[in-house]
Amino acid sequence: MPKETIPFSAFIESAGAKHTEFINQLHDLLLENDCKTEIKVAANGLVVSYLHQPTKRTVANYIFRKNSPMIRVYADHIANYQGLLADWPESMKAIIKKAGPCKRMLKPDACNSRCPMGFDFDLDDERLKKCRYSFIFKLEDESKPHLRTMMEREIKMRELPAD
Image (spheres, rainbow, N blue to C red):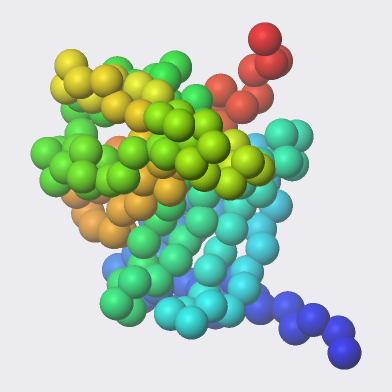
């Protein structure tokens, strides 16, 4: 039986009208930068993932928690643009600070060996080693511009040749 293709418009509709402009802008940015979209049905709603084709790594995905759309950013290069976090609202910083540590950075055999590890970066003069699933935020007016800037930086860093 062929897999059912879920249209992006179904996700837009489920996310709500107040998020449409942001979601469409970010969607266009990611598609213009070699990302492929995959949409799946999950227990809490649709999940939209963006896979960066050149690196074969996920850049972001939208998920639903308590019927509210959220975005998870895979900030693989956060150490290269961690300065932008200084301008983030305290509520966004608190989410990151409260998130769990990367177990694999602390003890290499404490997590799945296939895990690509988390992020090692500074936030408010504190060294953090956070799990790669730490950057998950509600879509709110306050967070949207910061999330867009972060996505722009992450995409730009992924386009640079590897060292």
